Length: 365
Image (cartoon, rainbow, N blue to C red; front, side, top):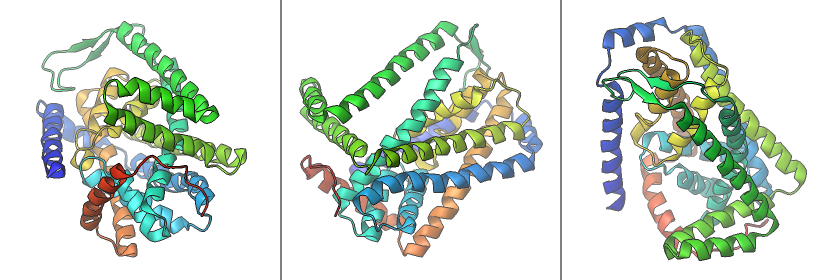
């Protein structure tokens, strides 16, 4: 029942976002912008998108194989691609749980351990994201106020974003990133202190929130300790950077396809906003959720016409969705699985996970 309510809410949010972004659209200008896209650059954008599917598995492999060395590339690839398909097609971002369920079945790993392994992948992924966001906050320092043209986010009049607001946001983000890095270092050096402080501080607000935060921190700590060597951690970090470089490469291809002349850091701003947007609870198909950061970035940073920004967002969404759908459906067929059945299984798996006490770090079998 709870899932049905959230699914309904997410569908309403998706409709609202799409209406907000497109209800004032000049459809003739949008059609012209879509027709102006250069097919060669759009085709080239598929190279980094598909490449990122494989670099992610190489990164995750250093975590999974530290726990279960005989786990196949196929099992990890199928689990990841089916999870992406779930995130794109099912609301509420159930992908991480789906990935754990599929890996548990294919690699014969207990679900609690496979869920921990899926969560630990965020540690390596965070390395690339921190670098991208750090470059963004260093490079994107507007000297003048920024203006969102009419129609960007449903606004009928130009909307001004004060330059000092961007600067303050960049400074706060920089401090937050330093705090995250410092927290990860402290978590690596002394996990017990971090968990105790988290439990005491958040316990004042909610015991349940404190327990959830401690569980997540515990799993992140496992991610830092699970690598068999410093070399494995370095290689996983390298593949994280390569994966995020693929995202940036794809973004540049979309800009080139529409002849968008913009500062070099525009793609970093777009990717940072995209990372934040898609990390939120998902709406069906990521409708609006994927488009909003692209449109806002191009209008705000590159001074792009709204119709062209909308065209980039539409094709970027479509050209990201197609590979995810093709790979995900292929993996479902190859592994003889059903996304509907997996969606049901995740509900039971999540309930069992919430009843499970905070455990030890996943160790080798």
